[in-house]
Image (cartoon, rainbow, N blue to C red):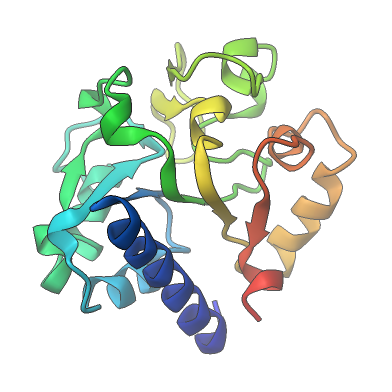
Length: 213
């Protein structure tokens, strides 16, 4: 991610969290895994926010121990919940009680990564027939895969599309030209999970490579 994009994205997320704190007394951020957001998390962690009023969630995770290097929880603990952000409240996805709407709904910011197979969060092509996963009108739910998915290959758990879109803002991280090509394909290819994120009308999708130039 270019430095200018990173700086604009950091400021935009910080402004959204501050607006949530000022309006409601608290704010929420749904974080994603992968390598794309690591510099962003480092930037966010040193910002002068009242982090004690910020709740941080994970959109997805691999079913491994929380101290495993392939765990998104491990990543969040080592890159985001540092410095000034150490006082934020973190809710591991495996422990999330989705009926606690007062703590969750709507999220102020949802960050989503993108895989080369068109998956986002941990919603993969093999799960497209799962209406609970991809129906924007489904009840909010945590989807648990019955098979190993992705690379590295693990069983996964993920917020479903309905839950991810219960947000004031949703930002898709598109760090390079290869990922931009996947985005363009996905608008018309319903075999790609990303298609269902891009073609829904519930929540506007912001793109890191276009909206934060």
